[in-house]
Structure formats: C-alpha cells, structure tokens
Length: 114
Image 1 (spheres, rainbow, N blue to C red):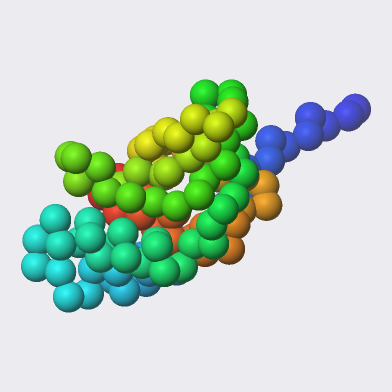
Image 2 (cartoon, rainbow, N blue to C red; image 1 turned 30 degrees about the vertical axis):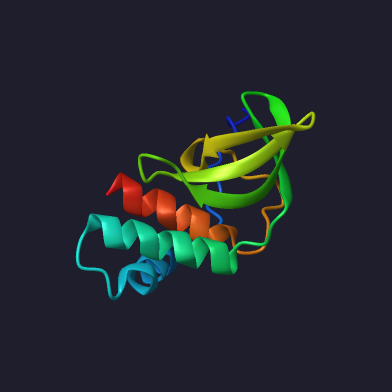
C-alpha cells in the first residue's frame, strides 16, 4: 500500500533567533516606539540593497528606496510604469531570490508583529 506523501513545511529563510538579534541591533539605543521605528528605518536604509524588483497586488514594481510616510510608517518607494508609489514596506512581497539585506525587512516584520 502506498503512503501519502507528508506535507512539506514551508521553508523559513531566516531563523527567528537571528531576526531577534537584528531587532536588538536596530533598537539598541531607542527609548520608545518612535525611536525604535527610526532605528529600523536607518538599519533598512543601510543594509537593504536597492533597487530590487517585486510585485504588489499582482503588478510588478521596482523598489528604489524607502522613506518615512506622514504617519511615520516606513514606505517602499516604488516605480510602476513610470509612476512613483509609496507602498507600506510591510505590504510588499519579497522576491525570490530576495535582495541583499532582506533579512532586515523580515526582522522589521517580526518587530511590528510582536
């Protein structure tokens, strides 16, 4: 009798312990949430290699940089068909393969979730 194949667990790109270490590095000198957010902004700007291609809502975009929006949210500065868009960084799907420094984006996502 044939056995059913086991369902594969999705592969994680980065270990949670490594992401938690990146979080500690980003927020080390921050006293409150706003300062921690800015610590992440600086770490992302310093460590993620731009530009990179990905998609948003099924449409290809090129992420050129990041910026801080009016509500202090970190936005990805994207270009789609010549149009400049500010998309919340948390809403972007990471491409495969991810850009250099993408582990910082995942650490930011983990920090926001906690």
